[in-house]
Image (cartoon, rainbow, N blue to C red; front, side, top):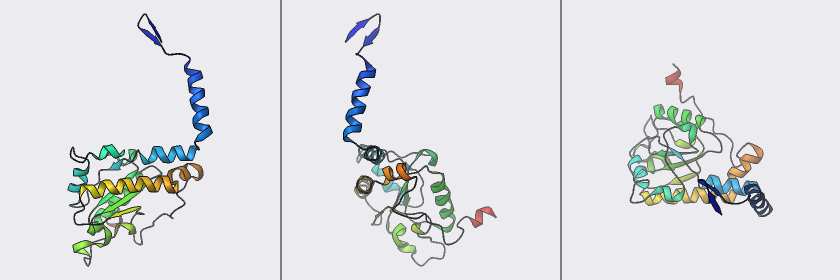
Length: 196
């Protein structure tokens, strides 16, 4: 390495890039690389449906630091690949969940957290509660009321393992579709109130 006139020369970058490519492609399949990269690039959309959002926020606070797991909450669904259903989903909120899900790029994943997201919780017999799996496909469920931040972190780690073990992202790159599930079509039009 030599420096002259403010420039640093490291060597022939083309040769180094070719060697790195040969090493990676010789030992690692593209699907495996995509699975690894996706599992450590989970960006949950910040969509608050209920009171579990405080525990979700605590997961990414300084005490638990959810970013160390390769996950970072984001505000726009078009730049995210994970949606976390944070508690009760009402009929009106189901429309927002479905619209957000449709805007997210593939491959995308979903986590349902809290007793209300699992089966309605305290509101199990209410006329306005919709189960999240009736609106979007769910990958991981977190029980509890409310689930602790440690549970949310564990769910993120479990989702990462599932992505790598079942090759969910790599399979999507190869086939253009997630083979482990068919798309969930809501039984009823959850956005009928909004479309008028």
